[in-house]
Image (cartoon, rainbow, N blue to C red; front, side, top):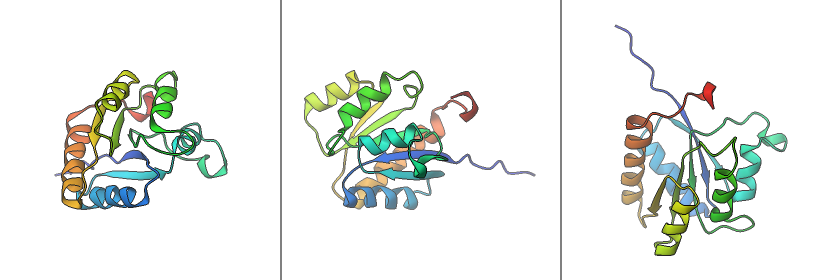
Length: 151
């Protein structure tokens, strides 16, 4: 009997807050999510990652999913979302807005800009773990993402 290996996904985390990024990373580890988690600190770094600009980004993978904070320096999450969702090359990458903001206008504007989901960050590790468990179950088990060769 052969066991099918679970696919490994690439996730780009765009978040300038080290404590939140740490909680997200720990939650992915705790849930044993089959992914490589790549972390950048703002929209400028995220665009460089996606466009493989700079020596450090020459061989980075195209992410299967982006987790995006809204409130960041330089290029914030709204500006980043607007830029990638109008790009023919990048618009098919699903984006989950994962932010501390629960302001209705942020929710509405994120969806209008093309976000696939909007999640308000939980305040403790137990809730982070549960959110990541749900993300894993939905995005990496229930949903069919395009094959890497087709993107």
